[in-house]
Image (tube, rainbow, N blue to C red; front, top):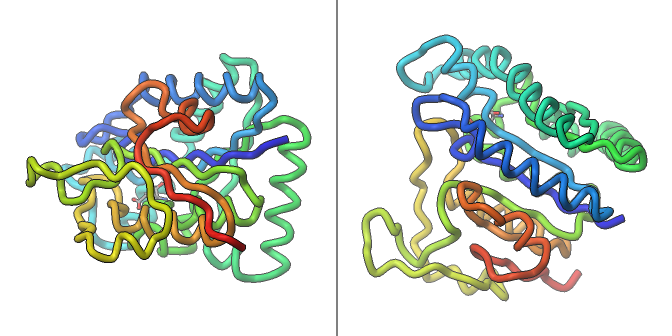
Length: 257
Ligand code: GLU
């Protein structure tokens, strides 16, 4: 069975106010369910626990203290997962919650256990919904918004595709919010092509990612042979188009392994 990994960033899951973008998450879940019915076993990686927690706590802004981010994530994660579980259940598809850390990916026994658990769930045709275990690690909440975690999961499973959904249409030659001449980069045959681009470190109000971490995640996944697409999660059809190989967002070609 083919396995794509689809990652939803904080800016896809939640509005700047922290309010859940329920219709967006529901639409992405419908697309995932459509693929699932065609025999494609999607693995979901989702951010948004901190964004949900910040909203539940009615904090005016995302905190800076790591301990507060971890605690906000602990508050938001249950609600976040339940949203996916409810939406996928409406589509008749069971889900399972998985929380991983960077350490799990580097310690061999943990890595093998994580892979076995994921493979068993996929064998049962259950959709895994993964987030970082923010209580014990701070890697992704410091930088990455789960982009690296998604790439690591794609490599772990030998995924056919990694889709990084964000609130931008893909990678641009410059920041399109500041430069009207910015062009969408549709294809990256070799990451070395990007050296001349100034890829911004700008991050959304709720997450810790940004284009830079998506490009690095794309390099990690394509180096292991997994093509990667950065596309807008706010536009209908991005997941289905990415899987069909249609033009959408920025596609990074797999590198020879
Ligand atoms: N694990 C974090 C979350 O779910 C990642 C997002 C972030 O970097 O804020 O919120």
